[in-house]
Image (cartoon, rainbow, N blue to C red):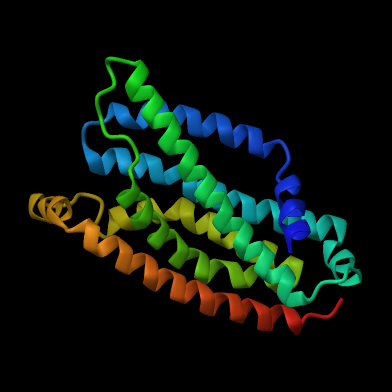
Length: 219
C-alpha cells in the first residue's frame, strides 16, 4: 500500500513544486480579504484544483504507461490499488490544507497590510466535507477503462467551463442580502463535522463501488 501511494506522489512530478508555489501565493492573497466568504472561497480553490488535477494526471499517466498491467504483476490486490488512490487523494487534501494554514499565518504575521482571516480548522472541515462528496461521485469513473475515464474527465472539464454561465442564466450568481446573512449566521461549528461525517460515509461507499468496477476490468 505504501509503495502504491509513493508511486502516485512521484507520478505527480513537477506539479508538486507548482502546487507548493500556488499555496504560497494563495496564503498571501486570501487573507487580504476581510470578507470571510471570499477568503475561504479562495482557500478552497487550490484544494479542489489540486485534487482534480491530481486525478486527471494519474488517469492519463496510467493510460500512457499501461500501469494497470504493471500493478497486476505486483503482489497487491485490485482493492489495494483502489484504496491507495483514495488514500493518496485525501493525503493531498490534508497536505494542501496544512500548507495553506502555514502560509496564511506567515503572511499575516509578516505583512502589516494583511489583516484578514487565516485558514482555520472549521473552514477546512467544511471544505473537506463538500469536496469529499464530489470526489465520491467522481472517483469511481476513474476505474473504468482508461479511455472511458478520459472521456468522463473531458466532459467534466467542459461542464466546469459552462457551470458559471448556467448559474448566471438561472439567476443564482447574485445572492440576496437575506441569503448572505443566513450564510454568515450559520453555525459552522455544528454543520462542518456533520457534513464531514456524511461525506466520509459516501466516500466509503464510493470506494467499494470503485472496487467493484475495477475488479470487473480485464487487462
